[in-house]
Length: 79
Image 1 (tube, one colour):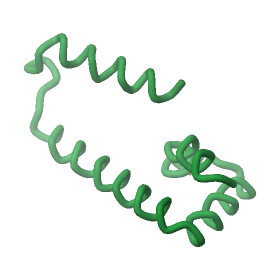
Image 2: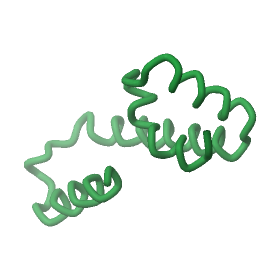
Image 3: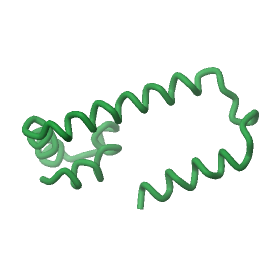
């Protein structure tokens, strides 16, 4: 398991979509890799911040070009 592997499977890791062996591999790597632990913490913090920011936000109130840019960025990241 490499750092790149961990970063590719973070969404699945957080959404509990990995088979047990994959999850164990990621957790073993994270236990040994300080950089991945830091990245994992930042990833979690970003998700929490986005959730807090969106609690009161109404997507209909956001500029359409911003919504499209965010969707495009997410789609690009998933590739």
